[in-house]
View (cartoon, each protein chain N blue to C red):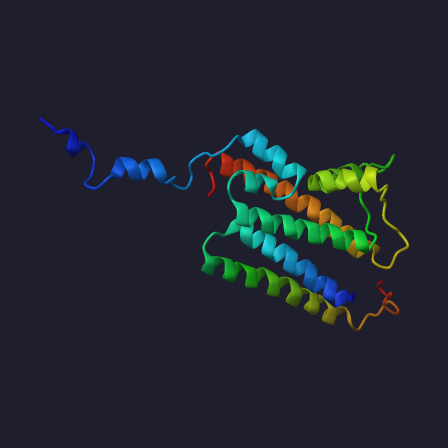
Length: 63
Length: 147
């Protein structure tokens, strides 16, 4: 499992959870899910991109 | 003088009201709903007749716990001299039975030198915190404050 896959999986689980917890209408659910999921994945990529010039060494391999 | 039929609108309102339960009506025992929701993620919602939602919540919690377990994340427990671990333990305990099964049944503690330790910890802690929210949600649904 790669770092990116785990980030996407985590975003998926959390987004789906809050979507079902907070919204009842299908249209609202789709909108909130996309906001949360894309916000988390996009935010993660943005932070990774900002940190790119400051490497801390090779990434640790995941099992 | 008002006739009996004038007290209600036309049609069969009495029968309709007896069958259809409007949203926001209290359902079930709120204390039992909270206990069930805590013990097994999603079970409180299933008890409150929110079968689909309950099953999805159960699936999401199991995925989160399984991934955290596979990555050998930290299943928090109180450590002497580290008060913040009390808070984290409370959060992780939110997952209910799975916490105790992992901690006491499987003697699981995680692997601090494992490559996936931090990721796994995030998944396990998230599973517990999500379920605490489900406990509160079950309470609100049972009291008729939420649909």
